[in-house]
Image (tube, rainbow, N blue to C red; front, side, top):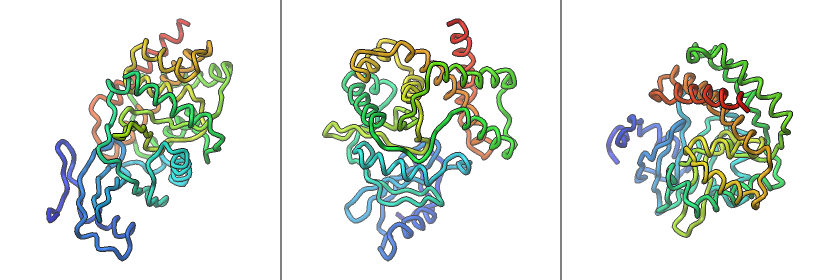
Length: 306
């Protein structure tokens, strides 16, 4: 490709030479001049499909403002553990100092949507993935404690000069009070993915489901994974019931729903913080952060009625 930048519809242009520099580091001594590169999306990062020597890969380049948000050595360890479990495509290169990663591209894979993630066949596969992850004996390198993450993001906001949404001074104490409530319910630390955006589930033509993007993975309560899944895809109540029944073998614990609601509030507040930090670095996510902040308040009010 001879153009100076690579641009996909609706995506910002990206410097091709910078991408080629990454590929030279990944494939030292190899002629990469014939590599075909195409932008394939990504919200917090820039992802590209790379075709080279009749092989296809995904090149991940971290986006703006990711410094301090993700501990890359933890991500690499956890992502490679997921590869060993067979639920993450093979990783061919990982630079923990930069966050640049190269993984196998699953040809003709289906990326799930908010609608298709709620199909019964897909929910059964996701329930199996979660049982595999949560039930494994792997000890991930880190604990992903959302309360400590909120405190970390407070510091990152101050450093970036980012301003949280109006009313946060009253909302934050209510959010942080959920730690005591969850401790009362009992927090069960298991390996978790912690970023269940439906687009992180991809299905190969043979039906194999993969869970990708382990940036925020760490030891957490499994109900945090379900909270993220439900809130990201806007799960219908009957589908929530279906996948929980699949996961628990029909015996859903009495406290599961309350824990999920607590974690939904926490995810919304944390990703609202994430948004204002990223936007202070030049990104623009429209009403995404404000919407999540507003929904956190709505769910806090619902939780108060229980």
